[in-house]
Image (cartoon, rainbow, N blue to C red):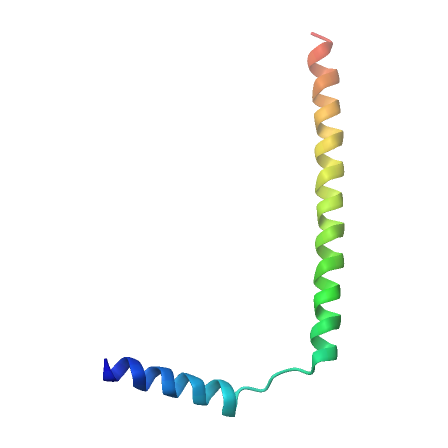
Length: 63
């Protein structure tokens, strides 16, 4: 149990003393960038799904 407590203390010291955290404005801009990129990717994948579904339905109906 003492090893675990030592690990937690060392981890807390590492997080509070040695890690350089980015400013909040940078986090906001990066979050916005990820959100917009994810929405664009979802739209492209959805459009491809729609096109392929309709193309395959058309193809299958011809036989």
